[in-house]
Length: 201
Image (cartoon, rainbow, N blue to C red):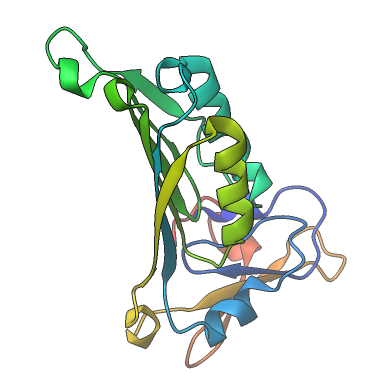
C-alpha cells in the first residue's frame, strides 16, 4: 500500500490493515475485524446450470455483472473488469466468456460455457461478505435452472505468522503533516514530514 493513497484530503483517525483492507466510509473497523478473525479469506464457488438462453454469450451483460456486483457486496475495485470471448472455432466445446474483476480484497471471476448454458462464478474476499446477497445477485443476472455451491474459509494460519507490522493509524491533530503510527510489537511513530509520502510499506 502506498501512503500517498491514504493521505489525501482532510485527515481524521482512520485504520489501515495489512492487505490493505481500508475503504473510506466503511462502518466496520477493519483493524478490529482482522485482529479477531482467524482466517485470511472467504471463497464462494457457484455453478449455474441451465442459465437463461443467450446470457453465456452476452459480453455486455457479463461485464455489467462483474462491474456491479463489487459495489453490491460492499467491496472495492482495483481496476475495471476484464472479459474475453473464447475462440469458438478452435475450441467449440469451450465457447463462451471468461472475465474477472480485481479487488483490494481479492477477486471475482466468471466463466461461461455457451454449449450447455453453464456459468461458474468465484467470489473470493479477504473479509466476510453476505453469501445470500451474492447468490441472489447472480440469480438475477443469469436465472439458472439448477445450482451447486461451495463455501470455503482460507488462510487459517495467516494471522499466526509474524509480520513487521499489523496496522497503521493516520492522525491529523489539526496539522498539515499528519502523524503515521505503525502498530507492531513496539509501536513506532513516524511524521510524514520526515518520510517520503510515496514510500511503499
